[in-house]
Length: 153
Image (cartoon, rainbow, N blue to C red; front, side, top):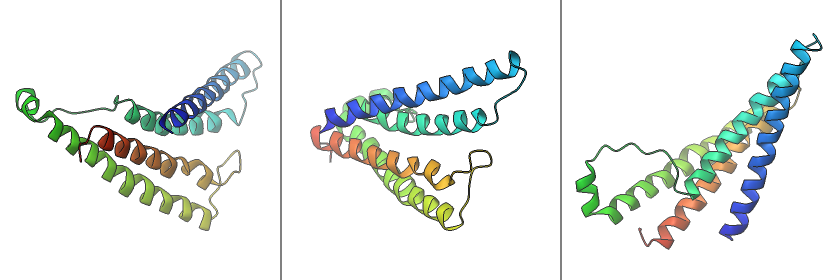
């Protein structure tokens, strides 16, 4: 199951990055060479960056590449590495569930209820914010999978 999710997520990230890259290149081309800047490229690139960043963070969690701040000296952590890794992955799981899944779902629901739309593309912002709970579910999945696989629960 993990291999399928990883492969799918890699392809989605490449697609989103390609869309963002094309959008920025088109904006530069239309602004400086055609002297008529495109109106939609700003939103397309912004929304692509949001999706790329959040899905990329979920992917990084699964690859153990997430950002870490060492507050405890490494010689103390080395003695109980498994315990500290379990605490870190447990904290990531709790954050992913509470903030990203629950909070992100509430944010999406509110933007759909209030019918908020993007200024240029006129699409509901709930579709843009939908990446937050999706990424949260992926972060939770990867954290649970790591905790079970490494028996750090």
